[in-house]
Image (cartoon, rainbow, N blue to C red; front, top):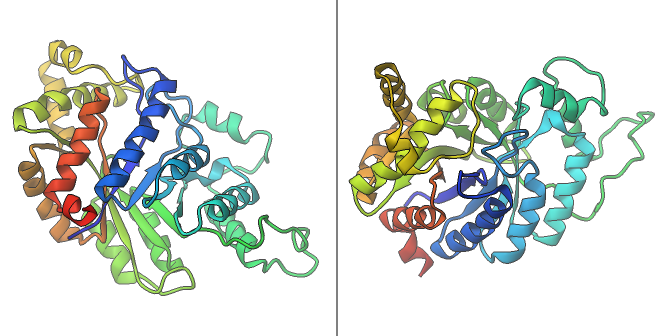
Amino acid sequence: MIPLSVLDLSVVTTGTKPAAALRNSIDLARHVDGLGYVRYWLAEHHNLASVASPAPDVMIGQIAAVTKHIRVGSGGVMLPNHAPLVVAERFKMLEALFPGRIDLGLGRAPGTDGATAYALRSRLDRREGDDFLERLHELILWETREFPAGHPYHNVVAMPDDSRLPPIWLLGSSDYSSELAAQVGMGFAFAHHFASHDAIDAMVHYRNRFQPSAWNASPHAILAVAVITADTDEEAEKLAASFDLNRLRRDRGQYLPLPSPQEALAHPYTDSERVSIARNRSRLFVGNPATVRKKLQPLMDASRPDELMVITAVYDHEARKKSYSLLAEAFGLAKQAA
């Protein structure tokens, strides 16, 4: 049976303030830890009214401290926003505190708008353009300590020096990250829930071109998908109405808190908006557990993921927990956990 994991954005709703959303993330992590989910990743976003957490490393420590079995990691740290040494230190520290349970997922996008990205980086350096490869290389060098003699960083040590960096995963929504992850022999996670690039192409490309490395002897590909499950198809569709309106607003640059199903169902949609909603539904799997499993199966068969990572963004926290419970049962996780 394919392993299931969780991607959490600490979603803010019109009825849930950011501080409560963060507490909900901790509660959800406890819940899925008992269901047999293997990983719990937290995203990094800035200046978004719909996402409460800009600091996944802080949340990782909080969640790892209250769970027992599940791996906890970043999905991901947006590397252009951070000095590689800081990332190395924080994740080596997390690995020291929770050995064998931490993941370091890296992204190359800023996770925010241009002005906020500038504010995040303006005091760090003045480099322009995409320097993700440079930062990734430097991060690896903090682990291998292979800065050449005479380099200004040669005698600098990322502490704690008796803990290794946790496993590194490259995140992506295009073919760029799949190619890079294959070349450097790292794990790869594809964001089907918002990607315009074909997930099957990216996943197969990664697997076919993977080069074994000190990081991984074989490829490991995670497919991240958006899922909303309830007891019936009708109830799941009602919960998904919040997603429909929220996605429509996001396409217009409006990153607002997630609306309630009642607000979403009462919204006076135009014909063109309904067309957009139908198009966006290609990134969302909705229904009762059997329906969702049936909808997911063709994508899973074609892309051959080693792991399915699920993001469920619904208005009601208890409905979100139940969605993950139903999905665990549909995929046999509950029996394995028992």
